[in-house]
Amino acid sequence: MIGRIFSDMIEVQHLCKQFPHRTKDGRQGFKTAVDDLTLSVGRGEIFGLLGPNGAGKTTTIRMMTMQTKPTAGTICYDGLDTRHDARRIKSLIGVVPQHINFDQDLTVGENLELHARLHHMARAERRARIEELLRYVELTDVVNDGVRRLSGGMKRRLLIVRALLHRPRILFLDEPTVALDPQVRRRIWSLVQDMARNGVTVFLTTHYIEEAEALCDRVAILAKGHLVDLDTPQRLRQKMDLPNLEEVFLALTAETQAKEGR
Ligand SMILES: Nc1ncnc2c1ncn2[C@@H]1O[C@H](COP(=O)(O)OP(=O)(O)OP(=O)(O)O)[C@@H](O)[C@H]1O
Image 1: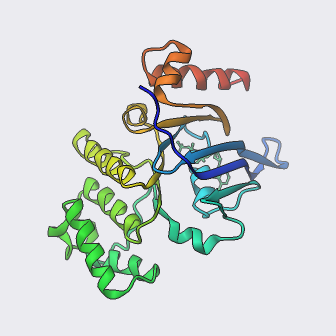
Image 2: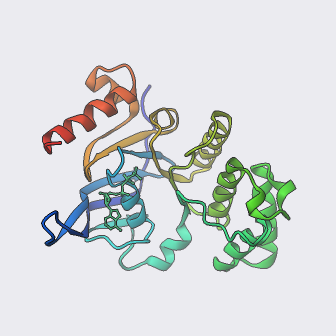
């Protein structure tokens, strides 16, 4: 299969993040969580960031969504630079965080209403959009229920609804299907695929290699903060002559860990 052609929507250049860190002998040093990461993502592409625990995936997504400042490097969306255009970028991106962070004392509808107001959506538009999205993810029936009463899968779908309210052109999902059963996982995959078909650029992190293989046009493999490889799942398999992406992932990440003496 020939990959789809995308024009660039996300440009990450030489991104680095260092955190303060106390060494074993008690001296103040730093730890490099992301090291010289450069990648670009096309408009409407589904792009996956894979890596073992501690590889730097969440730190990357947090820098890309402006929740933490890079130590060095640049991030641009459709030509807008996060260092200078934060406000415009906030209306361009939607974020589905790894951890569920609704206001637990509010209902489903109230949580969505609050978020829509933060994005300065007009009243009529808020109502219509909330109704449309709840229908789309089949959560209309629970609009007046407290969020604590939802199942894990419902909460994940609601996180996606919240992120999509203001019609972002880029959607970030950090581990979108963690701890979900296979049915709900597949349902979320088809939601993400629908988004991309509608021209939304999707950037996700995942631990589930089969998720990346099923969903992503291209994947970047990160290990110890370094970009180890970046390609379509098919080309990665072919290059390494391995039957599936999981084998590729294990081989590439083991290589990096061996090089770094672990
Ligand atoms: N606020 C912080 N202060 C110090 N070190 C941090 C901080 N956040 C992350 N790190 C370190 O940066 C490295 C990368 O962490 P990160 O959470 O980005 O990895 P990850 O790939 O998302 O891991 P996981 O799959 O376990 O969620 C780890 O060594 C982690 O300990």
